[in-house]
Length: 385
Image 1 (cartoon, rainbow, N blue to C red):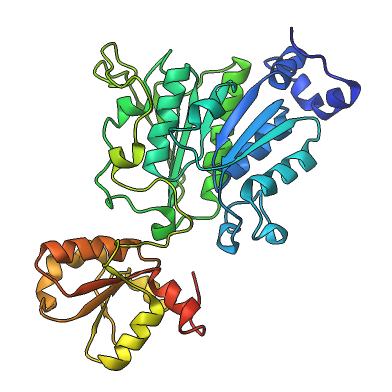
Image 2: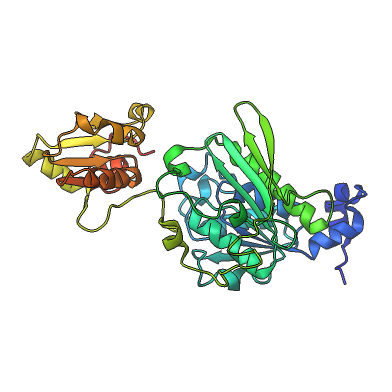
């Protein structure tokens, strides 16, 4: 039996009640429904705000990060007053202020193979607001195994994607992407950037799809992928089909339980910020690099960032070869030189070190934390970005 609405709720949701496709019964459905939102960042912000405002009765938030000032350009659920606080608690406070009649459950922990089924089991729908491939595949597989719709979205720079993956009625995420891209091929938003308004556009579409599914109205984007480009304000659609050879939702699926998704994707699914490391023995920290430059002025500094990033911060006498051009420009470097590679946070430079090592460069180190670590620990006159 659906819960009743009290007089205050009838007034709050009156604009919904006037829509025939929603009405009183639809609003009672929303009050009785639940949604799990994986990630409370760029996408999770508008998604959770609009689902809360719409009256979804129970909302779960999964995240383990804290609010950073660099989040506020796009993560509108947080504010300056919540910098340093847990994202799930910051978001919960905002949602309950928006709508105190709903229940908000928080999971301040990484979403992993060990806890995902436990967390997601009691929710009607899962919304993927993640920014990495291991968690994206994990979210998909959890939804398939539990028989729940997975409202998917992704963003990068000016582009976004939205779909509803629901194995009972159409394809799942693995039907479209059976294998993840090679590690390092697709940069993260921390590396490549994102237009601040983009997650608002895409997250609102994601919330729209979730409400359509929960209400049972309209034509949810099951079997369709929306492609959005903000620069030319274009919306394109790609038809998707269920893959009969899908390893998770196909008739002969061989993946029956959650796997190690970091191993499957070859990249970590959980880290704080974008501080990268090349591994034990391959890193050098900023203070150590400062001392080494005093002893070895001839040390080669290789900056693998994009040219426009040099306008933000730069190290004197560094050689700039963007990561995407490095393989074609190795002849510009001397493999006999002592070298330290750096980027913004250490992620791209770690990949550059792998490339250099495979090409015979043996005296190369990665600046852990990148030029941002240098700005924090050595030269505070440089900005952190």
